[in-house]
Image (tube, rainbow, N blue to C red; front, side, top):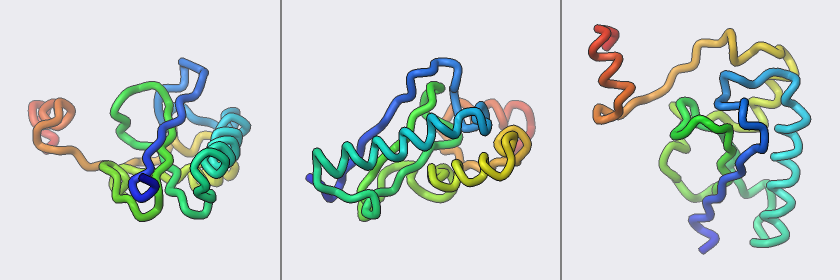
Length: 126
């Protein structure tokens, strides 16, 4: 069903684990993921790029850089503003400042049952 289209693109470089690892050096890779992902989805599913939400999670569910492609109308888990960073914005931020994601404070939501939340509790940070 195209209403709940949800696809993930994995990047080949294994050393790029999350948004925090990205610099301007990765702009060609990110632009390629954006362009090729949109083209492949339009060709295979007939959904144009303008009808997609394309984003990265922070904190990610696993530490190998991946990009989510979802139909705009589909409220996929983790697609909310607290966790999703639009790929187009990531590209713009890195084009402006190569170290943007190394320097920027990033707010993210955690569920009470997540291990990271428990670690914050143990450290007295919550």
